[in-house]
Image 1 (cartoon, rainbow, N blue to C red):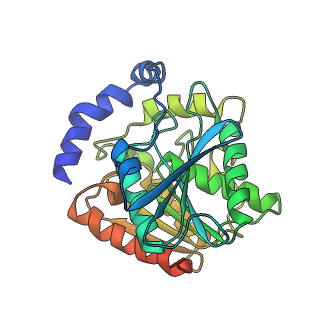
Image 2: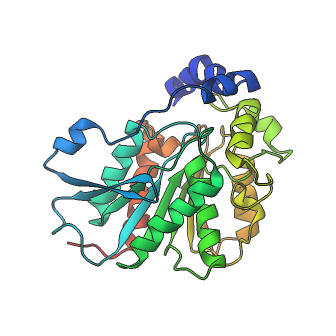
Length: 297
């Protein structure tokens, strides 16, 4: 954890999030496609399929040990993070494969369009299309990290308001819940966060919101309806500026609807990191997801 914190403090935060100017420069960089790593496509352990949904890529990963591909049954939708400006990363594909192994279910990976070329409204519509297709085949579970976790929660709120089938549960890893980071409790936490910084994130968030108000639940789900959600399993470190709003979500929903994991000393999205705290959290969250869905073995 200390090594990742040092990398974040010395390299990642100054380059991307420390200032508005740094964020603008990062936003202007070309975006890659974000397709699965080549080794995953060659692997005999997984089936990887691809389709275009509403003009965007959606990949599906399923373990070859879990019966035939396709058909009816439960599934998982994984929404990757990256401050709405970064494509999916190798660490995301690793946890996606772990979810496929644990649950025996196909894991759908919607690659939503990134800012500044794309915005929140498009992503919500895309996720609604992907989850609607999943729901036609059986119950589905949603997982997201960072911005992807905020987007997963926002999409779930939209499903519920539209009377569409919501996920049977949500795993949120370090969710970004307020696009403008207005919680005054963020300030003392930000001093300890080696990875993220408010100025750059606010700029990324403003571009992502586009014409939506910053308190619109489609970009800031903390301001949406929170009393009728599926069960939530939430993971956050206490050196993460998103901690303040995670605590607020916990206190608003209460223990009956949210299982809360706050890891001392951990940084942003720690369950995705190859550190002891991350490995322990991954085991817990994988067991939780597997317990919510029947296996397709």
